[in-house]
Image (cartoon, rainbow, N blue to C red; front, side):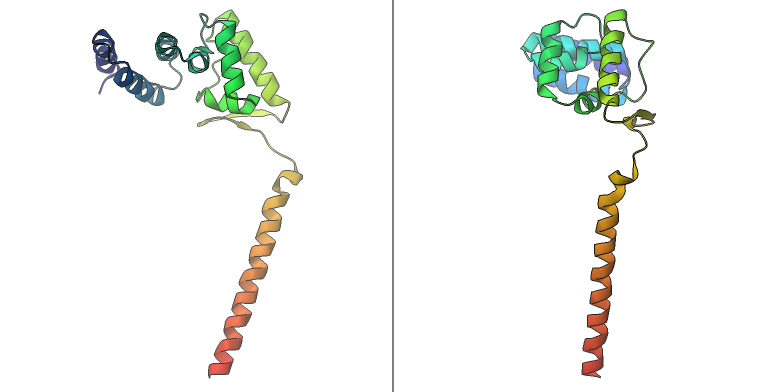
Amino acid sequence: MAKKQVLAKVAADLERGHVHPAMQRLASLTAAYPDDLELRARRAALYRQVGNVAEAGRWGFLGEDTDAREVAAFERAYGSPWRRLRALRVTADPSGRLGPAADARFALLLEQAGRDGPVTWTDDGPRPGPSSWRDGLGCLVAAVIGAVLVTLCVVGLVTVLRWVF
């Protein structure tokens, strides 16, 4: 269904006082168009209307009309900078397309997330950048343990087969 048609249905839902279906429709639209700032603003306005301050801060974070109370609620709800960055669900770096207040907020969030390692933008959105060898150490240990277990199973199976035959 086209974006305009869905937005018309959202407006009709809100006219009838059906907030939940309107929220679901806007959620579907923002999933389909994650970088559309207008849809984010509409979703934030709807969350403001129902009194969900944290979600209003989340969806309005990239907008100019989000107040400090909403941003603070969003930050409390999503404690770490990386959780907040992922919660925004953007697929491309919106810097440069934002107004001055939102651009400053987003730059600060990128800086905070970057303290744990560089922020790399992929087709799916922001990801931690290249990591050190220590980050892969757990995977290496798990692989070695897995290889040892497989070897022990094969040796055990061979031993049992020799007993039987």
